Length: 446
Image (cartoon, rainbow, N blue to C red; front, side, top):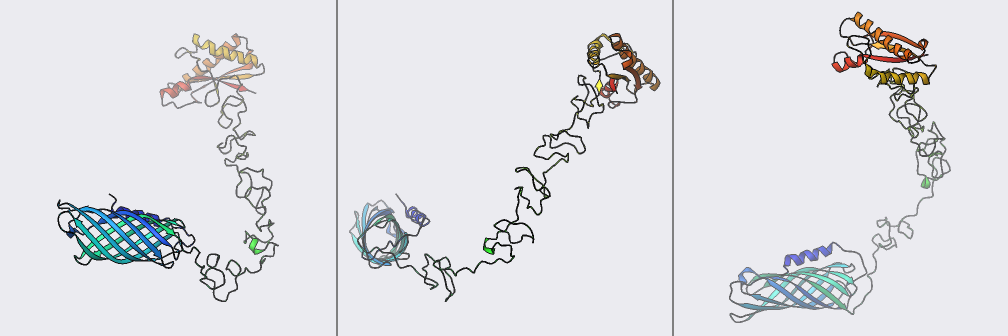
């Protein structure tokens, strides 16, 4: 069964959707209102709360005042199990509509009537009552409205207070249907519904919109653009402006011409505060064209903004410790031509057989570059006697050079030089570092 609380919630939810419309309450209209809801009895009456069915017939005297005869029926029963009790009431009510010109019309109501009880378990009785209430009518059209109604009903004989909450429809038949005359709150001759300035002081001359006419446009800075069209009122004197009085930005980079140090920047290129193309990494190539935007400061770059690799060994010039390495050479992370895989007998200068493939690859490079001259460098780690390491590095360098000459490379193109432990490629504090330091390295000579 629908409860009074539920019907009240529905009614007030409708109140949130109010919109302006032409006058809905029409003088002279006859209304018919079928309603259904919930009825709550006073606890002393010992009756169960049940659904209430109602039908009201009304008449709108004016837009604000109306009268209504409302009949209700409740099929209740004793809450003590004694039997059924048929309850009916009839009331004559006066209704006062608070906003008759709106689509949502709240109202207050009061009336008198009687309530009749017809129980199965004792004789029937009729009591006089008065009621006070409130409700809303939400007009779906000029002749049909949703209705929500809440009543407090007071019976004099038994001093019981009952509640009724119901909802339904109100149907309107006949009556006048003309809008209420619009108000003119400030008395300026323009009604409020058309008045854009509803609080104009008395005596002020207004236009058709209810507002004082605007003053003639001024040009306070004398730049030929009137103040009403002036979108940039603080432009420095002498700055070229457009029709809106704003500084020109010919190249469209967001920096006004009078501030732009680079006035012809291509469209779409990001610029700095001077209007010049941004070069975030300072390599001389603007960000829009820079394919390597995070080049370290000072690194030589190519036209694409990427670090140069002049000898093409895959190590950028700014990291390359061994420039001019032949393109066919295999280099280490320093960019140096280290013969990886060339090994010697322990403590000797005798090449192991497994070194041949690496050395043969160098021979092919030398033959492919007949003008290439090399310094064959021998290096050792720092373990042991420096003098012995120096001698051993020289012998190993000479052994590699001898291999090259034995395989067809002119000896005049080769210089063997031992450096001992004086030029480490890595730390001598670890086994891995010492292994890297024991190496044969090839340095191109000009």
